[in-house]
Image (cartoon, rainbow, N blue to C red):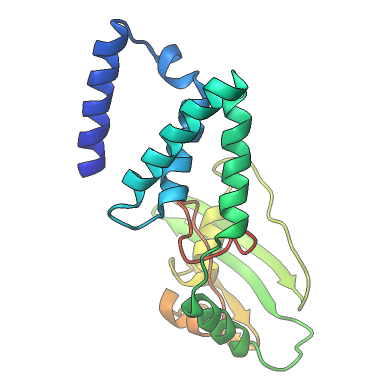
Length: 208
């Protein structure tokens, strides 16, 4: 809410400055979009004064590049983003600990890591997933492909405990996972990610 307030104030000042505004003017300026990202990255994500310091640095770089390199400011922004990300990664021992805990849950050397038999999920009269069977061996990468609405996300929910199957079974590393909760599934080493577009503050670019 606070960021939306300042964004609205900035937009009103920008409109007053240009006397005319439309989506093309706002969203077609590449260096503005890059500068906004660079301000946060350079100043530091999750800090109070970071964006202010980042904005001061970016404005100085922007004005200096315009004087010395004319229209090459976008290239300079891109190079600066790469330098900052590569030279100032942020690590967290918590992420390493979680990774070790998940790996330690998968013990032994099972030939079959994940077994799904007759997996079915119905929402009232709508059958989203019907009698799905597949297996995943240790070290294997399996892709789940289908059009929108085919039930791919529902299957992931069923595997990790977010949904309870109407029928069928899920076994992971030899354990029955059909009716476990998401926290219990995570502790056993089975979880999923969500399509949430946000910076992973505690991970390096390589791990991200």
